[in-house]
Image: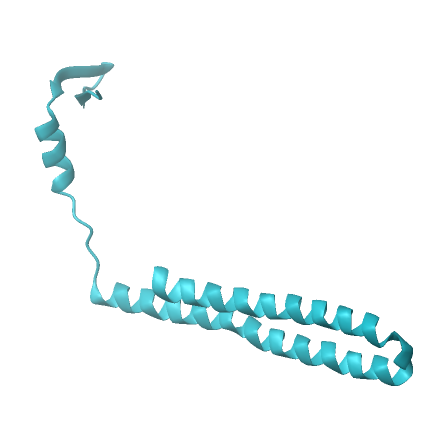
Length: 117
């Protein structure tokens, strides 16, 4: 059980501990404090959420660019050395998966910013 004490500081003296506070007194003291916000503050918070989600979603464009680069390089590799077709395709699929995963992470981060906060 946690016991809270009223603490009064007097000039020239150390801390005076008076009677222990009951749970009702503690609850009453904490209930009087309320979270207050204004409409302006809420608008600023909402705008910050949209800006953050937009910045996080920019990574999806990088993902699309990366996928295009991977398959473009795959076609160039086929043209230069057709005998390495299977090895090149394996690396291309790996590059596609990693690039797509980063795009999905960016999308999930943007969704988290919009809907979790």
